[in-house]
Length: 379
Image 1 (spheres, rainbow, N blue to C red):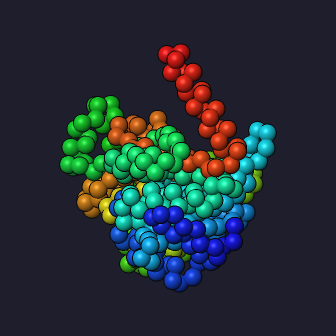
Image 2: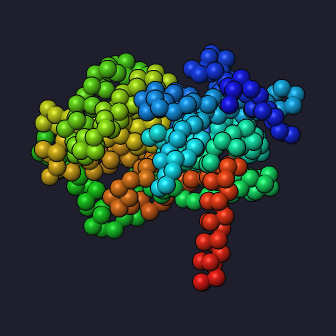
């Protein structure tokens, strides 16, 4: 498709902006972001552009503006178009930019109606060449995603929604002591022991949390990033990624270096460090906005594994979040059994797939419908 061609439908007009994006696109995005319900740090341009810079080298980037008939800007999104390999042949997909995100919304817009109209317009524009439109890691937005599903259905857009993953979260209600009182006696003892053992063994035990721009200026942003990256390279997570090959470990580290550098001056990232025995024992690099802390990138020194430094820093982080008045701590969607020891609360992220108008898309949709009917009859 010609990148300068405009595609119209009854409700909206789609404009494919230039890539790399210019200052005007950035300013428009920031204005819409401030009006978008359920927005999060993962929908900020700083996050999306960092993800593209580190991971998106092979895809065609589609920065989109959606205008109403009066020319008013109603929605914006950044998507990727690429070829993917199937069992028998390749297919074309247009998908969200969601690398390392937890939960996102598909675009910035003031309401769900505008988002649904914009996705319908996107499908009109690319439906004859794209087999699928994959929107990954979508936030449930309270009951908003259910409404979004109904809006797409009303617009005649064939699509499916399924759970992408479960993400445990720690709601900071009441107090730390109140939280401990609700645990079993065995778990309560374990939680208290995590920090007490280290404090008794190492007089220089210290928990540090850098969050505000002033915190990072005082400590040194580059110094903090350097310390945590050095520790990460020694951890089991880095070892596992190195075994995968393909530069996965280097890409992940580069991504979070850039994220910390870009978001720390905005007060949207924090680095938590647990030190003892003159050593950095554990760290957590998190993103935070509006009282929500998203734990994303961390590790611990395996030489001190008997002291459970990973549990100790989590205990310190939660206690400190209570004191600061944070709203919740989100653990992400991996290592669920470990996280469920700390909280039973969780929230889902979702995968929404819209079908294009290609022959492949029509056939795949029909096959899925037939399978669903046969399964229903079997029950």
